[in-house]
Image 1 (cartoon, one colour):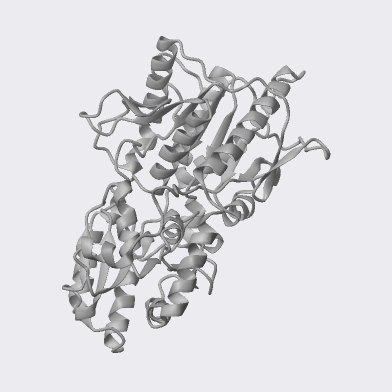
Image 2: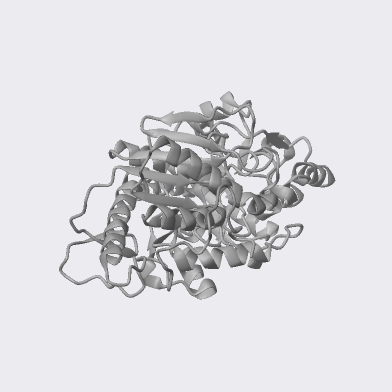
Length: 473
C-alpha cells in the first residue's frame, strides 16, 4: 500500500493483528511467485540456512494453496542433486534457479543476484507463466522482486524475517557484523516494496525507527503453528522414546550459531549443577540443530568444548537437526524449552514448544516478547544471562503446580496463532496490494503503489543475462 494512500473509515476493515487491510472488490488472485533466494525450502529446517524462515515459507505456501492460490517458489540451486522442480504440496512447486556454484556461502550470493534474476526471468517467460503478485523473503529476494515487479507490472510484498541493523545491535560474541551491502539492500527493499509484512509488533517498530519505513505500509501478520502436529502429549512416554526416562529435560532447538545463544543454555545448566539444585545424573540438556552460517561453522565444536569445561559432557546431548515432523516428540519430552537468542524477529521454536504444553524460558527480545507471557506461559530473561536463565528454569522445575499451569496456559495462548489465520490475513493483504497497484498503474503518473518515488520502469537494465547487481551498490 502506497505511503500517500489512507484507508477510509466504514469500508469494512479486516484486522491484521495491529494493522488493517481494507476489504474491497478485486479480481481474484490466482498465481503467486514466492522468492526465497538463499534458503532452499526443500532442505530440512535446522541445517545450514534453513531455519524458521523455511518453516514459514513451506507452511504459508501450503495454507495459501489450500485457499485456491497456485504458489511457485523460486530458490537458488544449492545442490546439483536437487530436481529442477519439486512438488512440495498440492498447488506448491519449488523451482531451482542456477546462480553461482551450488556450494557458495550466503555472503557470496549478492554478487550472483543478476544471474539469478536473469535465469528466473528466462525460465518463467519461456514457460509463459503469468503471476498476479510476488512475495519475497529476506532482503536478497527483495532486491530481485523489485526488478521482477517492474518487469511484469505486478506488485510485490516483502517479509524480512531478520534485519541487519537489529542483528548488529544484538550481535553475540563471535558473530560478524552484517555487511553494508545488506543494510543498503534492506533500505532499498523497504522503499520499493508495495507492502511489508512484519512478524511481530517489535519488528514493525524496528522498521520504522531504524529504517524510516512508512507505518501505513507495514502489516503485522505473525507466523502460525500446525496444531495438528504440535500438541501436548504424554511427557513420560516422550522421554522414554528418547531414552530420557527419569531425567529433568531442558531443550534447545535451533540452528547452531552464536546469535541463537545455545551456549547460554549450557551455562544455565552448569549453574544449576554447581548450585546443587540439579544432579548431573538426573538432568539432560538436549540441543537439536546443525551448524549455520560462517560464524556457525565452528559452533558445534565450541559448544561441545564448553560442555566439557563445565563438566557436562555426559549431560548435554547434541542431536543433529531433525525433520520438522519429529520435533513434537522433543518438545513433549522437555520440562522446559530454552530460547536464549540474542535477537529474534519472531521465535517460532517458542510457539511450537508452547503449543506442545511446554513452558518456555526465553530472552526478552523481539518477537519472543509477543509469544511468551512472562510469569504465565514461561519467563523472559536478559539475553546472555546464564545465571538468570538458570534461576527461571529452576523456578519451573521446582514447582510442579506452576509448571502444570504454565503448560496449560501455553497451549491456550498458542491457539491465537495458526497458519490458517495468518494465510487468511496474508490473502487479504495480497488483494489490497493488487488493488492499490492497479489503481496507481491506471493513474496519470503510473507510479507504483508501494515504492516511495519509484517509477514503473525498472532502473536496472536487463540485457540478455546481464543486469546491474542489486544490493551490492
